[in-house]
Image 1 (cartoon, rainbow, N blue to C red):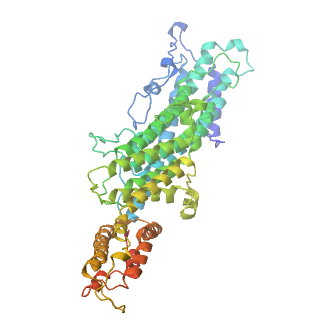
Image 2 (cartoon, rainbow, N blue to C red):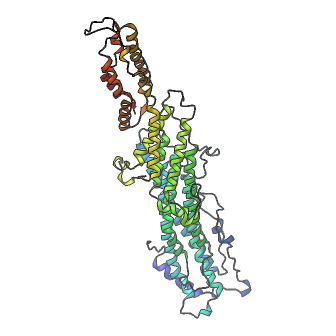
Image 3 (cartoon, rainbow, N blue to C red):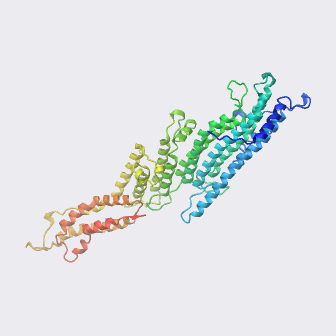
Length: 559
């Protein structure tokens, strides 16, 4: 549905109607027939309108700038006059929306007293969504303007071809001129709308900026994951608007209501521009999706410790932004092949294929970081596995089946409960956790039992506090001292490892306990009763199980 709008008052419409009724189709000529203006149609190459003007210039194609030459001066005058008014109405509405959006953005940024700013390429992520919404509003407003122009046309111009007259009195050239004059008016509206839509993709969405090198001419940095995801979500929102409103706009741009007419505006500029709106929206939305994948691939993980990388948060946000637009994604894949989904039409996959590709790109970035020189991959280094544990757990908690209860905003829940996500991330998490826990296995090599045959005492009398011989005591001393030394080193290396989630911290602490604590408790209870050192017994027994348990409770640094 669209709003009825009449851009002229009733009196002006009546006067114009009377003038055009008097002029008719032939009465406009005041001179001899040889002096009549010739008909100069606008040729559209291959019935396909392409961009010839700069993005944001206010015009998409120079075809709409050409003067109207129908061979009927009164129709030319009508078309040029209404075109100027219609264009200024569309342009003024867009400028008003843009001014209001900028005012809101200034207010929002002023209210933000602290916190890191988002990466800006042409516009902040919030700007892209606002620009996309404004572009859809402009598309809807263009329908209102076109509907108003169509109402004026039917009231003023249509009486020239009234069915009450003899059909033979209206020439074929006049009928064609009527269609061209109407198309000339509405094409300016659709053309301006087209430029607004593409401007959202290129200016606010940063579609023309490289994901690896940025834009050297303007100094814009490379497109980051957040900006690329915002542009893709904005593209989906725009495409949804085009899908819903585009057919209605195309119908309004049609002049003839009869399908049997041999003269229609199927090849007019307005009709071609309506087709181009859908075609370019699909193309540009596909490019924004490709930019998301490229941004993940080109983004370097600068973190030098094992905490959750910023790219993980960016990818979670990207998936949450793109997840609701399943229908718009099908519109893209129906007409355009994508690197991760080469099939088109009904054979194309759904949006899960895109989300899987994004996750795989993220995991590849993780592996690249783990293998980089930033993580010192020595024999006892746990940085790499711990980095994978943190990031995989973050993905599970924010995108997996458990994210529903953890989500703050229930309206923007995104649950990836398919096996390709749950099983894959779960397997990687368990595998990396096993690698990490292996660093604590070194403690168990000291907790071996001593054969009773090797335990001899200095005195044969069996009394409490009986002291072992030097050789026998050394067997137990070696085990306790080895455990103490390795425990102190391992604990010092792992104590300050960062953990972003308190629940994960408790899980890892309990897993570490299960690796060696039960065995150490049995070992300590068995051999602490034996006096294996005459002077330094307490030094060897400085870590009773209760102390170990308390120290493990302080393991890891929570961010």
